[in-house]
Image 1 (cartoon, rainbow, N blue to C red):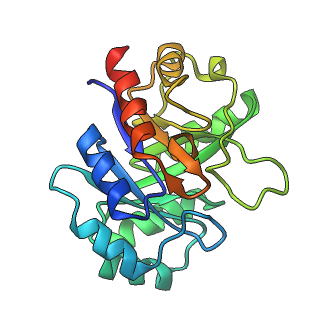
Image 2: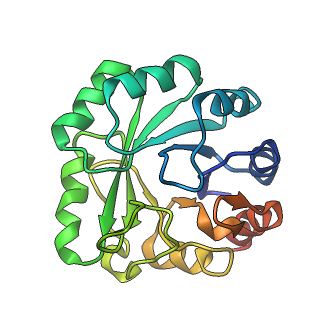
Length: 213
């Protein structure tokens, strides 16, 4: 399978095990109290310690303070920090330098005007997550199950490796990869039976759909 998959919003041992068994390359743990996928540091630590070597553990945070990042990275053996808020270019650089971990910056897309930010963040982040822009007034910056017009980024590249997110499901992920040329994809709500509750069968189906394509 050429396409690497990130299963995000994991909060139970069963979901972690299903993701690893299915062949995910990244596992995401959400540290954001407003999210139904939020985990505390102690829970994330227990889950992360069961992840085999070779599978990247990602801490998703939203406009975090240094103290919050120190608590997470000090207790949870994560391999990457995902910034999913309104962090500036300077803040991305600061986090990379201070914590010594690769940083993925999420950028919301809804139209052509949003594409310039992808290039800008690609200059300072190790990876960019190309996500659907959250609706105005939404409580969550991501994980809303919404897709954007994939034609906007069809066969395009940025200044850093990138990952496609937003509204992906077992039914549409193969088409999304075909249309965009994505070599990495991220899914959260698309493999759930209810908000915050992962469905192992859907996790397997999602990755199987990519393999089949």
